[in-house]
Amino acid sequence: MAKLDRRILKTQESLKAAVIELMAEKSFDGITIQDIADRANVNRGTIYLHYQDKFDLLDKLIEAHLHELGAMDEWACELDWNDALVPYFEYFEKNYLFFSTMLASTGVPSSFRSRLLASFMKGFKGEIDRESGKNTDLDEDIILQYAGTAYVGIIEWWIRNEMPYPPQAMAKQIGTLLERTL
Amino acid sequence: MAKLDRRILKTQESLKAAVIELMAEKSFDGITIQDIADRANVNRGTIYLHYQDKFDLLDKLIEAHLHELGAMDEWACELDWNDALVPYFEYFEKNYLFFSTMLASTGVPSSFRSRLLASFMKGFKGEIDRESGKNTDLDEDIILQYAGTAYVGIIEWWIRNEMPYPPQAMAKQIGTLLERTL
DNA sequence: CGGATTCTGTTGATATCTCAACAAATCAGC
DNA sequence: GCTGATTTGTTGAGATATCAACAGAATCCG
Image (cartoon, rainbow over all chains, first blue to last red; front, side, top):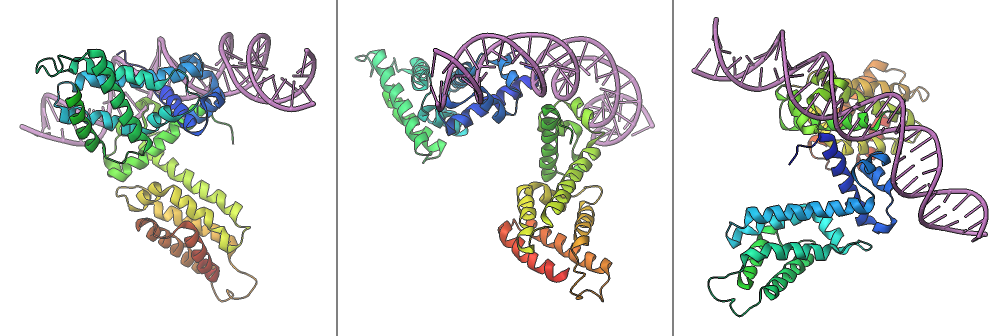
């Protein structure tokens, strides 16, 4: 990671936060570059120093979160199933507004849901039980699709219902269920 | 007011917020320039583009609040006593952390309390009743000191006790009491 | 006390951001 | 369709912030 100038990080952070906030308020179509600049307290021209347009900004925002989740995969795959998911649910909780917006908002181009699903399935790939023999009759495709949609679905439910259980409780139970599945 | 560059405003805002936060955590003596820079997410050198040192920063911070309160004086003195104080208590509430820190923190140079008192007394000066005759036997010094310390005292109490009444309720009651006094 | 460490204030070169202005593109209503 | 208004993307000059480095104070600790 090339160390980035502090100003770059700050502007990009403000811009990303601004987009999320605005998307929670109105449709993505209705959001103008000037809106984003105002909310982020940044000159309109500055946006073009970092992004092509608002679609690029949204795309990079999503990409960053998926990348972050991907990084957690490598770090967490060594843990027990009981603890492995805790950081994920904490991450979802911390970025509540982002996930709730992306999973709910209208006018979001490039379905976030499917990208999230693909990311999870990729992460599960290395976790399928090959030793006990319980999966000998099952195709990898099917297991991954099953677990992936279940995981995305449960996250969607958790976020939409305003996180009725704490991250730890979710992590533990989903950990149990995923372990059975994979 | 010369229109200031957006970057200046942002930097100064971060720095002021950083100082307040840090003072809520430890003594002013123990706070280093680097601490402030880190908390504000600003390069250490940048601080010196705006302030002499941390004392200057604290001083300007206090000055800005007193100036803001002073500006409200002129704007509010035309209102009825019932409504006149509402903006003040809303301001105290909004800047809760600042006032609570300044009134409580140790190691604060240049007593904030006395500057606040002086500011209030100045504001009361034009509000003393000269017509009804109820104050003919009273010296101005005494009235101002009495009302000023009462006002500062009640604010201190309100802030220290985590604002047990809403700003409107405070404004109304203190308005009544001040009107009797002045 | 003396050495080591941290903190301070300043510098110069550079990167980034701001601002105002512009023309082209898009949109809204008639 | 046309007209006016808004939005977009770009430009250039200037302002501000960054970063790394420095030397001198202040502070800590054995």
